[in-house]
Length: 275
Ligand SMILES: Nc1ncnc2c1ncn2[C@@H]1O[C@H](COP(=O)(O)OP(=O)(O)OP(=O)(O)O)[C@@H](O)[C@H]1O
Image 1 (cartoon, rainbow, N blue to C red):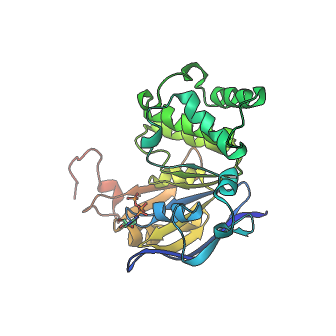
Image 2: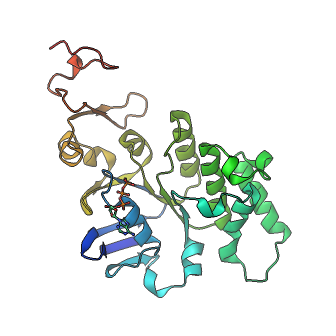
């Protein structure tokens, strides 16, 4: 399988504080790589280095073989679509206008839209089921609709790689699954940060576990999500078994003071521990 994106010994720091430290990995064509780890581990910073929002001073990022510092921003935008966490700049745009932005990397400054462009936008809106809301203002959409709108923009952008920072944030369990199923169907090469380890286990081919800016493990969910590794990184006891529906690893964390040696004694909803 060919490599589409590669980080080699990538480090990024602010002043003397190293935020991302010597991370290396490669993203294979068509795979979904999940970045997981505690708050402040450096996940968002790593993503920003990958699409050159942050300039890497040590190490390098290679995009389809080319050093990302040696290509134009437009080239990067043709190859990588980004769905970040903050959308203030597009809040007042309509859904149509947001999705239309996906055309920009492919257009000259004075190019007008043609019928193919409009068909592409219509197709993307249909795909994410927002075709009836094209004129609605972005900020008035629900959280799940906003994510779908940004996915439609990525579809129009026609890039091979999609980077998403916490796409399931603030979504209820139905919409979490809806968004991740939707992006998987696009058959792109995906890098996503996800806090929910059970979702990560279910939807990602491989996981990169970060802690304190460093890579702790990168492998299949089964190999990364071991109770030993998770206990070390998240500082909470946990049990890892198998999700009976998907066969993916299922992680259950104990609370701060619960006993994983006897997990059956930990009752739900704050009930009494029989011990
Ligand atoms: N531009 C910046 N200037 C200064 N510090 C920064 C900057 N960007 C990130 N940091 C710091 O780097 C650390 C990692 O932040 P980052 O947002 O990458 O972590 P994260 O793993 O994505 O966290 P979370 O899961 O909470 O979103 C934090 O301590 C943050 O304050």
